[in-house]
Length: 319
Image (cartoon, rainbow, N blue to C red; front, side, top):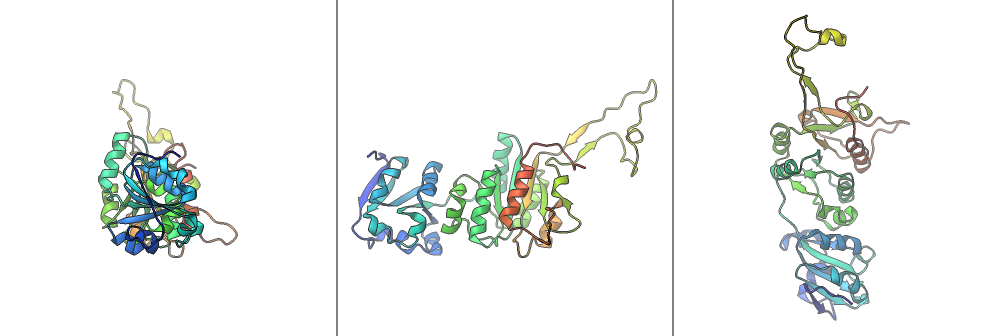
């Protein structure tokens, strides 16, 4: 069996050792208060945690599973190993299956830090914004969907549930370790900063009748033409931009595209987005429903919106 040099193996005969109390209790609030820790459960999630480069304090592994993770520990960490029957007695066996890890939460980045890094990389920027998602399953699924469709980051409001609770981490299948998450202390200020300083187009996902159908909304923002006044409603293109008189100096028409940066605001299924968040947005967009269906689960809706907006396409609104 290969064992990483960074791993320290400690054998257990019972779970009374204070060193493994964090696994024995498994109460999210207590784990969080004990030094901003979190618990990752299951082989796939633990593998992704170990591959992320995040700080991992320890692992608790059944003897029969040790070989699967021992060589993956790249940074100093203790691996507590016990008989399968002992480790499997920890609450939640059907989820962890004898492999758990205790990690340390990284500091939440700011919107400026995320945008600065994104600007240096170049390319499109896509935020997923959740003012108030309270269900841990939904939040975990949103993390997985956002990561899967290549979102730049998630922005969580003050009233959102904790993304580091075991259930959210487990449902995210470890996507939480790859996607930057900004825990906002003032969501309104952060949204205005994204919009005003960074040119991020805010899109409210709603069920309102006056919202634009998703199929008519393209990723890029407006296109403006300098030098010419706005056209009259219904004017023909020739009237909008008439040819120059013979001998007249040509006037350049410049196409100025907004930065390819957008943020999708998602509300809980039962209430939707609060009006104060809708009013901050540049557009309202909806997914048309049939057969009397009034809404979709927030995760399903997020997947539809993200798939649409992360595909290559033109700019403006399509007819």
